[in-house]
Image (cartoon, rainbow, N blue to C red; front, side):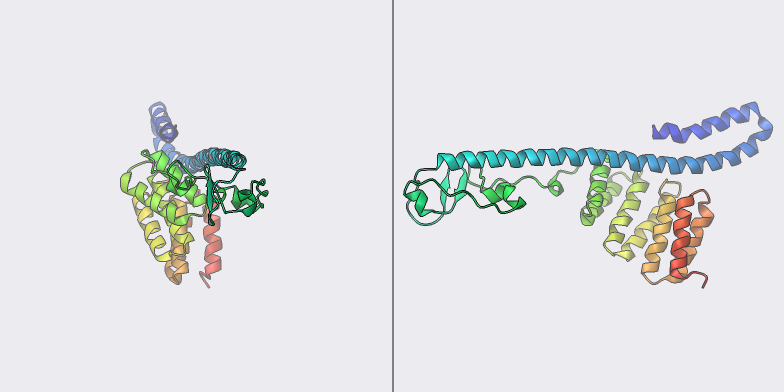
Length: 278
């Protein structure tokens, strides 16, 4: 779909040029303006698509995690009922079925065990209630960070972007870096480079962030994220104390991307904040 959108202005130019040869030069200028607008639209579509995917994924994970915890609680209650009688009189922890509990003199005498004391939300976790597997090892739910790396470019991009939204900047950094190594020519590579720089910038690693943004702008100058990449390069340089270079970059945003209104406004605000021209 994105490829079709990007190819549409070229097709329109060819049709216009055949029908009106004399206006081909004017049509080329209009095409350049249309392409700038299309790049911005493609970037917005990409961002919305990824956000929709990550929302669905997070919802599915939350539902699965909730069901897992409910099942763990139900299993723990069943084990407590089955263990009403004495299991072991020696001191120390006892194991009733799959539920590990400390030794209780009342339980050893045949009395019903005392009701468990609520310990907050963490007590719902399997490791908190002592649920174990057949081999006696604790059952721990799989954390999102431990998920396997997807085999597809879209999957890896999405997983890395979700980590960034969760403020797991080191995970996002690794994911987007891996993406660029595997798929440097992919249509999402420019976006991956930008988010890699964002991951570094969010960790206050401004030196490496500036390098990533500079390399990304040189490698993917026509990418929908190119204007934002150049802006963040200037912001990284400002954080490094390189005011003249940062001001030059902020000015370049206005010159190179006249149609990127939002990014230009941000660049002007950053230039003013940095004291450019003062």
